[in-house]
Each structure stands twice: as structure tokens, then as C-alpha cells.
Image (cartoon, rainbow, N blue to C red; front, top):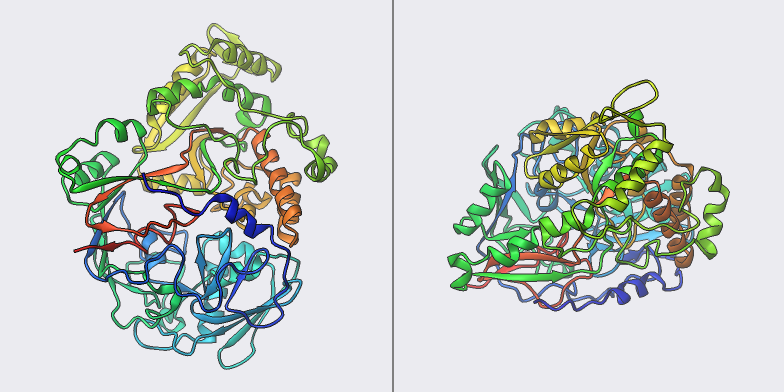
Length: 597
């Protein structure tokens, strides 16, 4: 098993450093305190600066794509286009909670209260066609993404009061309200070439190959089958310290398969280089195929220190049937987690106790105390029971019948006005309790079927419906579902994305990630507090309070999570021993891996 070198305590220590105001141009910026890496850094702490270049790595994906623009709602674009082809002003170090360092920008400057931020572009920064990255490209990209891109770009941009060119290579953004994270968010916006989009409708999906400034360009591709990215030998930033030991493969290829079963078979046949296993039972029992037994394929467990995030069955509270928290609580009790986890995972995974569990940002056990309680107190009348006094997810004895929890579920349903008549649960109007669990291929179908069977004991009809990926995405974006499965990944430095996840606007505006339809003044107030403060103690209290609001709101029936990634790969693929605190995450695989010939 790979050793997890950077301890979570070290990452959190970076958060708790005293606030240091940035008063002059700097090589980097951190959400709290000083950047962890010095101006004279040699490389990222989890990269091998002497890693060899060359070779090909092949990944597998399910589904397909019909667009090469990953920044708009229309179409399905490979996520890898954003990570390999386009660059941002600043680059992230994934070995600290939230620290950025110059990429397209050589420096960043922001005032003590972070009411503004100024970036100075590197003179050598270029697009793949050899043209320079300009201030005009930066401004156009920011405005276009906000006006025509995904909703997450618009949310933060609404706080930008003014943008102005301040020099030949410098640009300044002034903000309309306090937000400690905004300078970092602006630094992570992708920069596109303005001239490349002239005469092109940015918001329309197409397979036109765009020009980027990143280490790779789009090579050959065939929608529904594969896409290949070719390392650009003339990449302008290949000698930057932050890029040493990064982007080592000549070709990164993604092959597409109709479902997860076909993808796994392709890996066992040697067609793919890497496979991330999500099923611990299969990891333990089925990795005995010839490539593993001969040593051609290696199994690794990659530990991490990031929050658990949230994944599970999501209630759409826009539907009247799920508007009452008591109904949601009843279905939480009816979901026999211990039995499902044992059946599907051999009991290998712990449950997601809350949205920020597995970290110091989690709500913890027991009643709210201290600053957390003070933050929640003004909203006490609107909070669901448990937010202030303490809450834990229901647990069963692991038996299939789940009798004790089913009795609680029946009582909660009765309290909410539902009665069983001739074996069917009905409301006061005589309407049956019936809903649809919308899934796409390979997505928690077994768990949904076990859950559906359990609900029949309560007189509830839960229909499991499988649709293709395109229909699934469209219905999720429009909130046209009763229940879906979704995952919200969380970082050690949550920020503006929380508004996209839980903000009131998402109740009606399509395309956000507020799939459950949360409309909570308490949640919005906690997000505002965590964004405004530079005090790490206040920040932690605000996140813990938000975690309480979300968890006790009973918006999701949580699944399990893993504190490690199960990664199988060809033996000639290597990575540094030192791991980032985020583990197998963005910027690690394939970025710092290499092929050992």
C-alpha cells in the first residue's frame, strides 16, 4: 500500500496560520496565511522534477461526447479538454488546502481586505498557435464565461464591480462585496483566445477544435469512441518550476465504452493503462486475471485527507411528496445502509456522516457549541430538528428486515399525514406515495433496487428508471426528476462553489448543482460568513455550521465513502512516493505520472 506522506494535520495547519495581508505583487496566494511554497520553488512537492518524458497513457470513460467546449451547458464535452488544453492565470498546489501560484500570470497583487486583485501576465505566455496571451484575452474570457458559460462562472462574476487594464500585461478586478476567495477564483478561470472565437457562437455546442495555451493540443478523435491529446513540444510553460515533472506523456488518450462492464473488460484485456476501482469486493476478489498475477498490472491504495463530500439518493424537494422533512427522515430510516453496504461492498466502506466528514470542517457529534451555535441561533426557528441539539444518521442492526428503523419510518410518515390503505400509502387526498428514482447505466442500480424493495413494506412505490447519459444530464439540469444519485466533492477550503450547490437561485434557475432545491436562509448566511472572513477560526465554525444545516435538512440519503482510491495500472507507469494531501485527485493522475521504459 502506498504511504500517505503529507498528513491532514499539516494541511489544516496551513489554514490556521495568522492572516497575512498581501500588499505587493507575489508569486502566489493562499486562502489563509502565506502560500506554502516559496518563490524559488523547484517543483510541486508531489512531482518528480527528473521524471522522463514520452509514451502514451490510455484511460477509459463511459458514455461519449458531442462537443469540444467544456464550459457551456449545451452538449457533452470531455472533461479532459479543460484540464489538458486550457490554462488559468494561477495553478493550484494540491498539497495545501487552497494555494495558487503563477502560471499564465507571473504575479498576483491584492489589498489587505481583498477588495481587488491584479494579475501581471508572463511575457512568454503563448497560445498553441504561437500568438501571445494578452490582457484582452483575459478580459474577454472572464466576460464570455460569465455571460454564456456554465452557471458557476456567472455566480462569482456577479461580485466583480469593475475590470480594467492597468498596464501592457496587467489587469485589475475590483469587487462589489467582501469575499476572501474571489481573487483565487478569478485566478482559476480558464483563459481562451479571443480571436479564435470570432464569428463563432460560444454558447453553441460543436466539435470545432479550439486553441488553448496548455501543455497539450487536441489530436485525433471520434465522438463516441476516443479522443487523444498530444503534448505540445513548443509549449511555452514547460520550463516553469511549477511544471517541472508535470505533463510527462507524449499522448493522453481516452477511450469510450457503453458501460462500466465493458470498460473493466477492456482494462483486463490490456487495452487501458489505468483503472480506478469503485467496488471493494471486486478489488478483493476479482483482480486475479493474468496481467495481475504476472505482475504486468499493479494494485495500489492511494490514501487521502480530503473531506468525504456527499453522495447518495437526492430528494427533489420541489416535488410536494418530498417537501416535508419528516417524509425525508422516514425514507432515511427505511434505507438500510448497513445491509446495503455489506451486500454491495462487503462492509468495507464507512458511511458519509456529513458533507465535510473526514476533516476538521465536519459538524462532528453532539449539540452545536460555541461560535457554531452563535452562528445558527438567529435561524433556530427555521432549522430542522437536530441542527442545534445534535444529530446522527440512523443505523440498523445490519439485518435485512431493519425492523426498528422501519417502525420509526412508519411513525414519521403518519405524522406527516400519510396512511396505509389496503397496502398502499396515501395522503389525505387519497393520492398514493409513488416516485421515480432516475439513474443512468451503472449508477447505483443495485442499491436502488434494495431500497425500492424496502419501501414496499411501507406501501411506497419507488420505480427505478434507467435512461441514457444525455437524457439523464438534461433532466438533472432542469430538475426534472423525483430522486437521483449525485456526488458533491468537497475541498479543505470550500468557497463560492457552495452557492452553486445550495444557493436559493438554484431552486428555479436550471444548471446549478442545487439538485435538491434547498431554500435555506441559514445555509446562505453560513456561506456568506465563510466567504467574508479571513479568520481561520471563524471560517471553520461557519463551515461546521453549514454542514449541520445541510446534514440535518435530510436532503440526501448518504452512501459510503472511501478514505483511499483503489487504482490498478500497468507496472511501467510510475508516480512519486510523496502524495498530495488531496491524494488521487485533480492534477495528480496523469499529470505527475510517467512511463518507465
